[in-house]
Image (tube, rainbow, N blue to C red; front, side, top):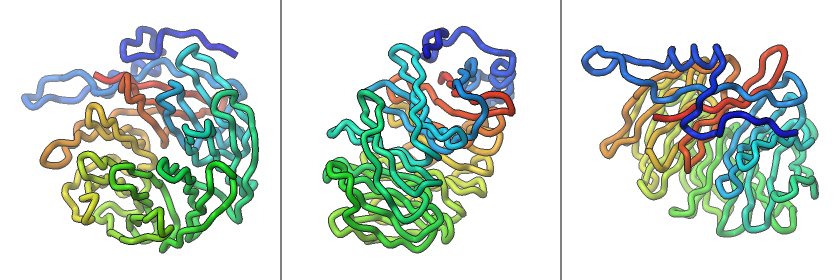
Length: 336
């Protein structure tokens, strides 16, 4: 089913009353007390067919120009194709983590309820396989050098390693507690795994399939959101307590700390404009990555239920998702 609306770029024109109010609420005082334009401007929400249901994860497929959202409450992976504004809902089960295998043309989507990973053809969006695991799946990442999928055991103490070609489990990484976000960095050729139960970041050697370093994320506690920039040599961990830390990617030394809103879940780093967007309770916190550290810029009001987001690296548009009692939505935030 196709949904036609004003082109999904930073120059959105049409906005709902709710979106307009969000944009107005985002205006913040400038250094002299004068009002300045918001860093993010909420656009008209897009209704996703199928009714109300909560989400759990988002990712942007830049090469396919798609927004991917794990619609856990409706048992689907929602795919918004920005080339034709078409929404497709793939019935994958209680979708949580998402990993993209560009080389083999696959999406891997975790099903938290059925304890499996569903394999989706990236071109046709048809289900092509299932990989059974021994627990619910949360965040996932793809090692592009070795063609391996890393999938966190939600609230467990391991990260499963799966061969992207054969769709078979080839190992597991033991970790110290319940995993949250994981990301692969091609510059350092390492995976970075947040562990929320002991406020640590595990640095995983993919050859050894083991954590070679464990770094503390404090003062960011209960670390959920994670972003990695191998080019600038930093890892960013966001804690539920409203703290965002920048760690040196090679030593784990704390380089900078910034305040964000509390209750963070997923964050996204726009490598082009060097902003970090944090999906928090009631707000999207905007943090600028500077040469010397981090600079808190604004807390942008967001619809109730937004706790995951992703960013389009080309247009710099920030995408989020949420549901109310009636419907489910995708919503874009245009950037200045």
